Image (tube, rainbow, N blue to C red; front, side, top):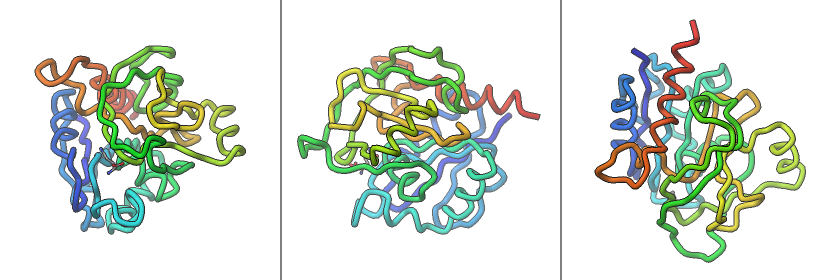
Length: 224
Ligand SMILES: NC(=O)CC[C@H](N)C(=O)O
């Protein structure tokens, strides 16, 4: 059974939902602590949503220096699947595992609502169970979800097929309607909406989040 770690930082909020989503998808969920420099031999890592270090400086700017991040960065560079959800996506940008940065939502408000997204590429470890062009519903909830990057970086992301999700109805001013991106290798994915909240009928209008976790489990199963 694949082992998927979820890191808890001071101020993480959605680590328990991420652990539950991993378990429901059929993998072993391994809690990881930000202060440890070990990732306990896991096969993949989720950086969850929340308010690490109270969002001081910029969201994710302090958590990026947690001891565990050196190990996460090293593993990601060697190809380990890493998923950053919301605060986790902000953290991946701060750690330079993904390009671009998040600023305040264009309306200066915290936005919490279901979002329609289009899956733009399935060539990643976290989206291979989708079909290209799938339209899915995933909940969004953040204050700094407005993705921005230089014109050169945006061009590169588009040309290399590194835009993974786009908003159908851009809620926050993100450049090119970008809701999520990947690195060149396709093993590191970050997105602002929260797939771990869309895995159960009881609490969600869609189960579209399940496929993120099924994707990585199927990817890990094909790897020797
Ligand atoms: N849901 C989250 O992960 C929130 C991320 C961050 N604290 C923000 O408000 O933008």
